[in-house]
Length: 367
Ligand code: ACO
Image (tube, rainbow, N blue to C red):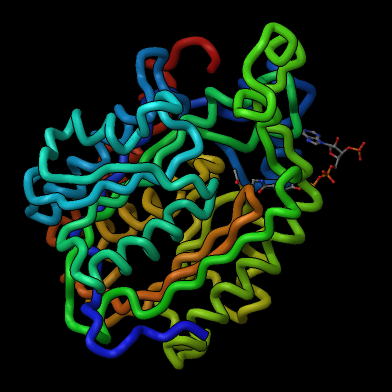
């Protein structure tokens, strides 16, 4: 068990933001691309549509908008940010980091910047790192982003994967708080033996890009979905139980759970094992699909702007992903109910869930 050492500062979220691209790729369009059906996708995953970045967008562009929104909510300027952590599997380039690209775009000239590479668990790992940085006084203001453009690493002829993934970004700004508030507990785990359940076989130092790797389609996601499913449910349940234990709380004490949106059946199975009622578990997979490290901060921003969190609420964030990695955080929420909550909820939490019909009308070509 890991406990917060005496004398360490607390760390809490003081602002959130998100951005998803305009372009909607729905199940009907996928039916025309691969041998699948709207019925199969809905029943097996819960997904109805996902967002796809425009040709001229890269992960840092999505991150920039989410980060600006989070900084605005926090009332923090880019100059005040000490560290930028970007959780992503799809940086603009492998060198420099997406964190540094974002730092330049934000003009955050006082910030160190780097990436966290933990697939769908990236945002949870990032919260663990941010809590450590703030707790030990290395940083006062951390900007944590989860961003993915999975459409760039998906094979749109492979029905096993292309129906699942989407693009998007979410961000949070963290600052110190009194011990006992904010992030109460973190659990972070990995099992590299399971690495090939979800992989991009080529493009790294083992098999650099070559004509052969491109021809073999080895630069896209390969997944053994059924095996991952079992790891996911076990890992998510275990992680939540660990953070509850660290904080000396029980599942009944949870006011809200924000799970990584990989598959509605994984979320339902985890929820049932924990005995948490459905209304306490955030679900938006039908609109965005699996956006990997972006799914938790996107969901968090939606619930914040809809006024679903109030000071003192216990909120659990939990994820699993490639690596394999899994983990959870438990926080005692400190932000007041978002002042624009009524308006944001009525308008569908802003641009993020702008009417799909409007987005569809402006959609162009497939990913
Ligand atoms: N449309 C129609 N049929 C399909 C599709 C599709 N899109 N995809 C697979 N099938 C078929 C399979 O070929 C198989 O056919 P068969 O029985 O003739 O062989 C059948 O459907 C059942 O396949 P399963 O793999 O057993 O289907 P399952 O119910 O397990 O659902 C899924 C597959 C959705 C991938 C599920 O296993 C899952 O969600 N796993 C977790 C995956 C995941 O979350 N990955 C992301 C990890 S997070 C990260 O780090 C990015």
